[in-house]
Image (cartoon, rainbow, N blue to C red; front, side):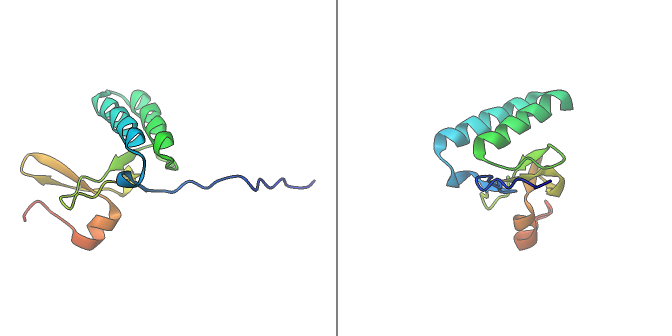
Length: 110
């Protein structure tokens, strides 16, 4: 039996920088992520993360959990939340993507 090859199949990126996509899509993404932040259970959060990933053309990770980098360097990378590094900046939890954590890891003690 022959295996079918789909030449038009596209591999989506594992991370996306919001400033590189059209503003209306970034706005849709932000609205979906805000709804996910207000959700109570994973049954509500995961479909919203899936929709948000689809809007920006991000490959949804196996965990079905995505995060937005909120590093003080103003990075806006969306990535697999399992790879996030977090710290408290006063009373605000900051999320760092792997790139920011490697380049300028913050601990909250700065």
